[in-house]
Length: 108
Image (cartoon, rainbow, N blue to C red):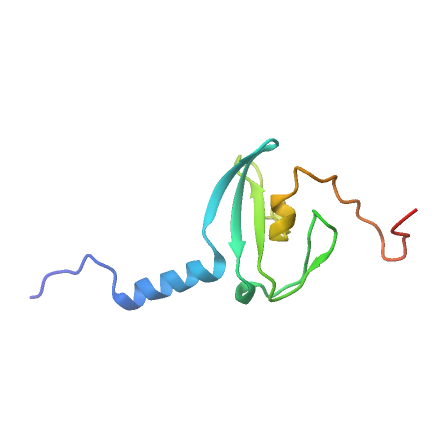
């Protein structure tokens, strides 16, 4: 009988590292409005179109971005928001984006 292996196999570790690189590693960031869980999404892992709440523009498939949700544990999947990375970093320096309909005037 051979001894049991306690270390993950090389293939398992490579798969786990590829999954982390694709979907990002979650970290907690502290901002004035509270703590947020933030995960970076690589361009290769981005398959859908999202609307950035910071600039009200689309995040197209294949564009790297971040996903953020409250870290207080009271939210659910509907509280996640996809942001352009730059918009997320600048969100305390800008006014909230006003969501408008397609036919609404942008200026004036």
